[in-house]
Image 1 (tube, rainbow, N blue to C red):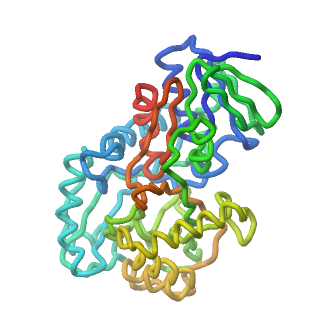
Image 2: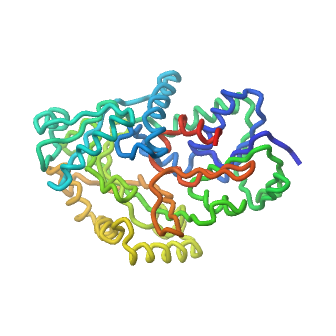
Length: 398
């Protein structure tokens, strides 16, 4: 049986960042990372759009507010230090309904308090930044420092650095049993490891893994599928940066928007429709019968109780499954978009959204629970990629 000072489960951006931070503070620490896939960041981290958020959306007393702006700056510095591409394209946030106008002040105040660079702009200023953007009212928000990076290159760079630092990384391996009293775990391949401390960063499976340690038993993860359309290469529509709507702040989703990737390709999305498996990216592939049953049950409870306005939100999102309705929603941001401008794409992700089953509510903030010598990161959703370097410090000190 091999022993390690620190064992990290999951080689997505959170797990890799925790290992990186630990090596920076304790170079001699003996670290093992266990990853169930054949490579790093195959799910949430690698399917991320690459936007470095500035910290506008989050209430000031949340972990997301605490780590987003600092994490964005640290990630941008990392890219520049290692000659990784970064596109500082900026973002505008637009009210699509008259009643959203008051949210501009709320989001502006939050952004300022959270350390974001943000300004309220007029219709004229918006047209100078994004000529194609629609404005229902006479003002919008502008986040000039919002940037886009390449998640795959960042993940590979951190992975490469960790290997050089002596971190052991095992692929195609996952925890199936744990003995917290002995501080040991057993994997699907029959390997047994002893840990001084263990950190669960398994993303879409974090609730399953935490329950192996009898932690976080009131939580479950609900997967929501995010589908994107691409902008037709022949389109004459020109988009300079990122165009977002003022979101519904009762739910943890930002609404469909335009995204510019690091290669300057434009995508529209993501949707947020329930998926019936944690890896149900395409068709019925990845559908898990046991998961589907549990997901359906919890979604029905949410729908009936209508907590956080979930019922009306569900109706809106289900309509976007159809291209015509998706287009109509995007036209509230970019009126000149037509059906021919939207092309189907293979860009799709799963948002593993945490549900508090006791309160029957979608959890809005990051959740980290520590019991004895194990720590469990249970809700590392957006802006987890942006916040990763800052969030890692907190996880290690939790």
